[in-house]
Image 1 (spheres, rainbow, N blue to C red):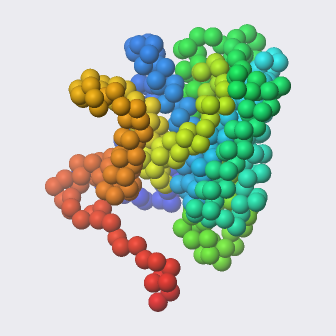
Image 2: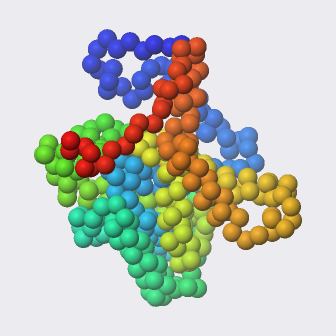
Image 3: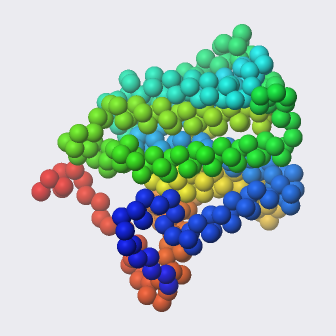
Length: 358
């Protein structure tokens, strides 16, 4: 059992709460840096997809998990970033300039959907973002002079500054570096006054406004930052796939992103990474499972979607904190053993708004 005694206020500002945590994060980072030298090319590709999905998860987690704004149109921001990157790279722009422009275009789209939807919450906001996703998908199919329409468009090799980055290993380190930078920036943002304001909006908009939080400003900022991070993921996704078409950014992709953060654990940056790992590795688990299932069942279409829905229902009912919540419980059990109490993480009764008044 470990006890952390805080003797000065500066300890609350440390990036890692203790040396033990810093050691394990350093070991994880070292493992990821050495992974391309020891794993197969296929597993390296899977790690790249986890990094890209993790970036999408971090962006959506900022909006849904920390600001409480539900979005079912994040595939549209991914598409804007991907197509902007492909368009600029085809005209010789290096990644150092094309990626920020792709992020800026996605952020502008985020502001465009945030301003009309400022008064919307919950299901109505989800419907508004869903409609935005349909509009972007249809626009990509119709704007053939830029996107190539339904025929799609090829993506030029990634050009950093001078020359092309064609090695998978170099692209792996680029994705790893970007997700580390984004995760670090978000962790610092959430500890700053801006992050506190976003969390206050999530918990109670009325209370946040009574404390002087500008709801319109911070909601718009959250949408813009979330869309920009997703646009960066779209730029990396374009270079990883090397071919773009509107069918890759349907509403089903947005729903998959939302499931990713819910299953990973809403309200946690770790949950976004856990959710990305789950989304990428689940198809591999299904492929392995098919070998053990009867042929009449393994050959059925929609097996992946059925398992996704079943797993999400089980998590909402039995583990609303997601995969990260499960990890916290396991870690707490071993750190407090034998003093762990079974009711430590017991769910409390949620009250309706009318009951809170009395």
